Figure 1 (cartoon, rainbow, N blue to C red):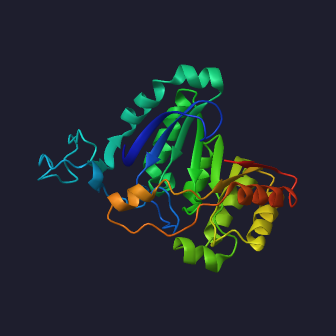
Figure 2: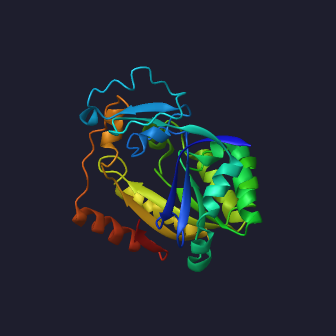
Length: 277
């Protein structure tokens, strides 16, 4: 079984419990205005060009996205996205099994959106369980409900993105409304799965009182949600936008005091634990 990914990152500590290996899938059904991984949005391979690193050596003159063996030694150009098979991914994941076992870690599938490549995702989850590896799935929730159900059978923990409460604003900010997303969250609740609700907070977009209230109501409504994680906007993706030839969104990075205010506000609205991611 083959799928499209753009990175396998080892020794991750923020993508679920313990030490983990995170597999980043290429392609996402949403197009969030504030996305900090713009290279993850397209399902197709892309070339990133970092102009300030280019020495004009000319080696990349005929570079295309099919040159999988291409390496720019100056780091000026890179190909983002490649097709791999599940055996290759699992072999990479297994390299650190000793660390998973000692830290209660495991494999996390992220993106992009893993559930947009359902067969590949299910195959990886199945293989991980065969090796008794803890599985986590980061998802925007916008996926076929039956695919979500099948993934739930093989997933120990869901890192579930909650981007916007208002369905109209959700569509404005991400390209899709949140009705299917909430239906899938409800499904995970019915199935008794463990869920961490991850909430990106973006100044000028969803840093509103009614959205914080919506986060708290959702967390209070669903028993499956173990805790809430606030993800303040950051501009670390700015260089990637430029490398892709795209305009970076003009969003202000929140000050520490603002972030602390968000945390305090949410903690006053719910008994669920609220953390900064």
